Amino acid sequence: MSLLRDTFLPRCMAIAIGSLPQTDIESTLDLITATLPEAPFWPQLPNRSFLEGMYVQYGEGLPGAVLDYDGKRFYVDPGRAGFADELTAFYEAVMVDDLDHFAISRERSLGLWQGVEALADRYRDRAPRLFKGHVTGPVSFGLGVTDEQKRAIIYDSTMIDVVVKHLNRKARWQEAFLAKAFPGVPTLTFFDEPYMVSFGTAFCSLSREVVRDLLNEVSVGLKGLTGVHCCGNTDWSLLLDTKVDLLNFDAYEFGDNLLLYQAELESFLLAGGYLAWGVVPTSEAIDNEDEGSLFVHLINQVKRLSSTALPLEKILARSFVSPSCGAGSLTPARAVRAFELTRCLSERLRAEYKF
Image: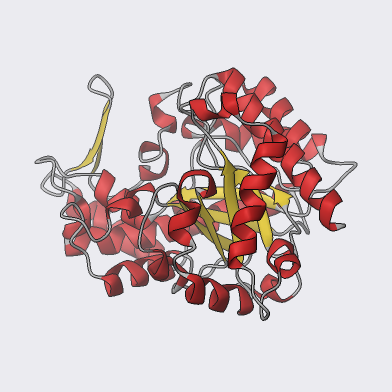
């Protein structure tokens, strides 16, 4: 848990998830600058390159990693020649805390290398309050990446230990990278966990304790705020029981499901946690919504959560607003609309509640 929890109040700050459908970096940075005045992020551009997909991008340097460019497949082969040496080098880097060993390369993250430098120039005269980074979470990475036989590596005890340590160092390296470009600006690191929708189903037989431990370990050592993003329905009590600072969820489609966990939500917020309400849809539904309809949708949910111990204004003070998920699957025009509505909704909430 970050010490920032004691002092930082977002007050309905606009943030966004990592991916965008654009392939041109400049127009993407224009959109971020125009719609996220307080919390920019570096963009993932999966339509630009296979290397910017959510597994390939963070799989660089993973022992046994194999890139099949022709088949557009990324997998792990622990049986290949040299795997033992790769594993030894990996654990040596972990032991001496060599974060450069876990760097994300320019080839796999144009938005990080070129984007962050350009954003630093764009925000020079109006320093943001946060800079947001993101890493694929260990549950999703472990379920989404398979071995050569297409078995999820999360069930391999050696590989899942490697994965959680690998992603933790990727996140810590990224945080240090962002701190150099934006000195003095706190970071917020999301661990994106779309596969948490599978928890408790036949597709994911992991125990609650294992999942909680993975999410706790992956955020160890980060200095800024940490969050988990899940864009479907899951066992929210599990995520609220971890040490992350923030829960980002799809409030447009699944807010009612989350609100079933009233006691856990109240405990999480009263202990200093944050909610990021993903109320702006990243689907065709965006065509049928506007600032007013989304405002009503969100406030109705916040009112249901509020109580004597947790009044509406206190919830909003510890809340961010965001799109419901990454915008990478949208058309560029819909992505622009989602970001514009997120900023408009943030401004409307602040005006209404005098933040």
